[in-house]
Figure 1: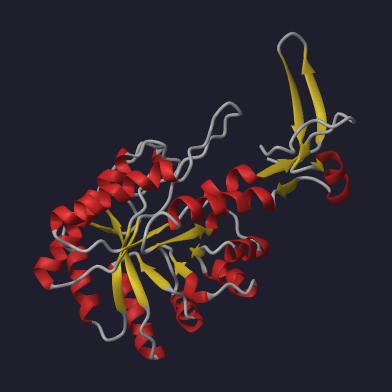
Figure 2: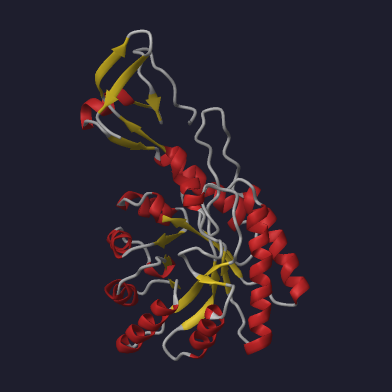
Length: 322
């Protein structure tokens, strides 16, 4: 909560300085209320503790966390890029006037139409998730006369310390090319030799709501060893490494969300050390915070419709939302 969140003289809760009862009366419920000030504070924290601290880095907001037009404009004005996962999100970003060259187009099930849209829009990076997508993208890029910059999403085989439903970096994940097996090796050889795309490097995202940084650091080491292997075996030089997001936020009132550099400093130090050991240049680094930027900046207002008392046992308050 911000400094302007408290109970006023009417007994009404204030959020971001606004009377929530008055907001509910004006706009109806259920109602999402989001603080622009708090979002900007988080964006500026990313800028100050990551972008200004390290050379050759970039940060993109993971739009799946919350992406109305206004959010796109806030992110743009704060100097961050956008991570998009569907044609609809790309449409929203473009409608908001967001520079397409600062967008990363993700998704493990992109349609052919979405890839065409991404190509015609000039997105900054297309993050390829599978061999079948690579084949489709190569066909569409050739037909359109485009040469998109691409990253390969990789499952580094790391189990993050989080809930199984938001775990995404293990070997059996539905997301990305597994390091185990030969599929990534085949894809890198194909893309690096292709006339219809420019392979820039790799992306990994090991999960969401991660507070324990050990898994992130482990993934960094695994990826650097893979990067060194591709350089040695086929001469492919990795220009970019997108380390994803998943940085944890607290939902309990007594909890405290870690600053972004509580994660990124250790990851960056590990990356630089691993690159020195492996004898490869440290690539450009991208991070993708989403929930970390927006989750504590918003609340949902409901109206209590029914109160049901079961004597001596429990009282239920039923609201107009879920």
